Structure formats: C-alpha cells, structure tokens
Length: 115
Image: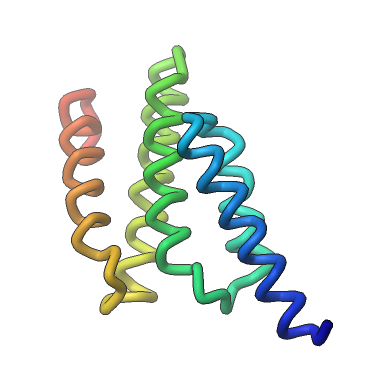
C-alpha cells in the first residue's frame, strides 16, 4: 500500500470511528477521534466535514459537563473550531450547517453571560 493510500485509509478509519461514536452519542470518543484526524491528517479530504462534526460533538460534550465554567469553555472551543472551518474552507458544503450551529452555541453562551 502506498503512503497516499495508507493516509486515505487512516483518515477514513478515524472519520468512520468518529461517525459511529456520534451515532452512539459517545461525544468524548468522537472528539478524540476527530482531533486525531485533524492532527495526523491535516490535508485530508475529511477536514472540512470533520471540523463541523468536531464542533458539534464538542458542543454536545459540553452539555454533559456539570461544572458550568468547564461547560462554557467546551462550547467556546467548539465555536473556535467553527471559526477555523469558515476561515480555511469557506466554500465547504458544511458552512451552512456550521453557521446554524455557531448561532445556537452563541445564543447559549450569551444566555450564560458570555458574549
């Protein structure tokens, strides 16, 4: 297997693992897999979509955190990842969904004193 084919298999496996975790609402596992994908495969075809799902999963993970400061911090990180998506992939098909997600998270942050 060539290194290009190995990279394709590696990023596809991580993305598949993350998608399964998302379907099972295992937010921490999804975040972990998507962060690994972002770190290990920065030129992956999955980058745009994975940034959306990373933000989505971080937001959901934030909902499960009892400590309000940690919850808000997690949601702020999700917004930062969405900013990376908008900056690096402005023509990505996930921009519309990412915009909606950013608005939802921003409303939550504003209601809770951040903004």
